[in-house]
Amino acid sequence: MGKSQEAFDRLRLIRSENIGPVTYQQLIKRFGSATRALDAIPEMAARGGGRAPHIADKEQIDREIKAARDLGARFLFLGDHGYPALLAELGNPPPALLWQGRLELLDKPVVAIVGARNASAAACRFARDLANDLVEAGVSVVSGLARGIDTAAHQGSLEKATIGVIAGGLDVYYPPENEGIQRSIAEQGLLLAEQPPRTEPRARHFPYRNRIIAGLARGTLVVEAAPRSGSLITARLAAESGRQVMAVPGSPIDPRSRGCNMLIREGAMLIQSADDILELIRHFDDRAENMNASNEMPKKCKISTIRETDNFSVEKLDRTPLVNFLSVTPVPIDELVRQSGLPPSSVQFALLELELAGRLVRHAGARVSLRN
Image (cartoon, rainbow, N blue to C red):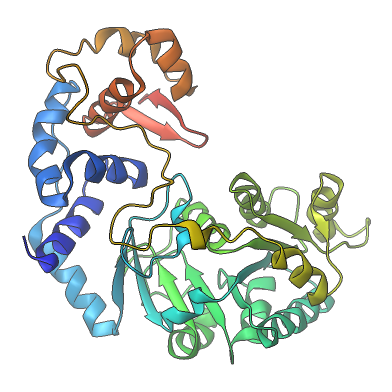
């Protein structure tokens, strides 16, 4: 099988119905290639008790590849040489990224700077100067191209090492006033997107973007944030991934500082200068050195899968007890293993079939539920 055909089929698998990042990894691990996984999906969905999911049309993938080529963008698949090792450590890393610019910026230590869209002028200046100091010290700065702190971080690091992660397609500018800086990042820095070209960003896309920002970085710094802001979601994702969480303190009477002050109260590192950040990430255990640099899936993906040597028949597996344990309330997969008494690989495969059949929903924290 040619490498180009496998890349085409991987993209087709990624864009198919009911297939998210975790499902994609399980299918590739189980079948060894996207081509074989695509062939197996209808039978698996039938065993899961539902209809086969819609598989992305070949014409759709041809159009996406052409659109990417017209933009001068390229695809980077999970498992490819050059895929960021720290990002691959996530439980749900993006199966594919579209990129424009300088991919080598990912070879440097990366720090995320995020914060309020309606940030104060003082906070924006602080973020801009801090980003400039970091890139001068050999660090790449990643942010999400939002208004306020994100924009300031990109402005401060643009000339040397800025990475922009966007929620929509590479050719969609959001917010519209950031079109100029997004174009500049594509030329001078690195621009990344998980969604296909021409995709308008929707609310559901931003948490996915935030996980990429947190996943790329050794640490995430928050500069002004409301208590329920997307910036705090990014910080939480960073903490869950074992990365440094940092925050800039602010006035207790400014609502834009409450999120940062709360993070510091909960254990985030208080940051006053770039030196504070450099000291923290200098001792970071760079797991990239321990990752497999070959074209295989990352070794640390924590997914139990069925191997050919497992001592049971997939066709004879009784899925009824497992389904009876499920409800519309999310439950940890480990709990399903304990209560069902089935091997972990059996549970994972049965859940995969249910998901392909459109009956299962995956939630954060390795939890699942029946679709309501």
